[in-house]
Length: 185
Image (tube, rainbow, N blue to C red; front, side, top):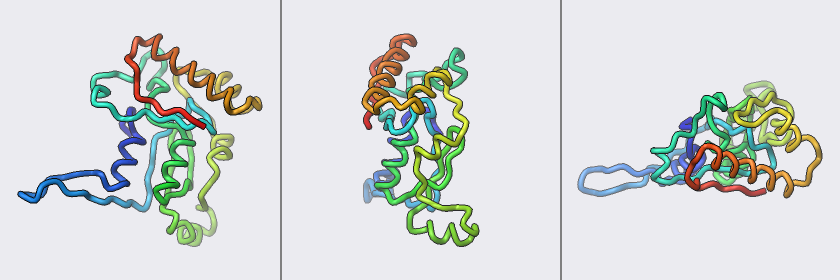
């Protein structure tokens, strides 16, 4: 939880791109494959929209928090749909989602987790169902707006258009530079 380019960092670490120096041997790749991964979710961007703030070296000088938004601007981090797609490619399945947090387990562990929990832990879960069944507390976006995007049956392309315009307005309202965002369906 770094309130910035969370998914980009996790993706790099899990792809084995994390580097360290070992003596004169130079940089080496370290492969990290945790059993469970917990990610903070940007609840302001509902499924099926995939949104992620990508890494840029200038992000360390940009404040993505606002008193007026009661926390992070909805530009930070990544959406639940982005996380689910990214983690599935890396061999993980969604096993829990609570407001602003998602838990992913290695897919090979899913039968074991189900067995030891008497079926209470199962997966991979559908992110749309999870989002629909959890109270959402998004910053800089009201419940009415989130409800419109998620529950009123708008075509996905229209939701993507409205989310894009909302995020552009926030960049402008808070006088931010262009940020490396990924937005897609």
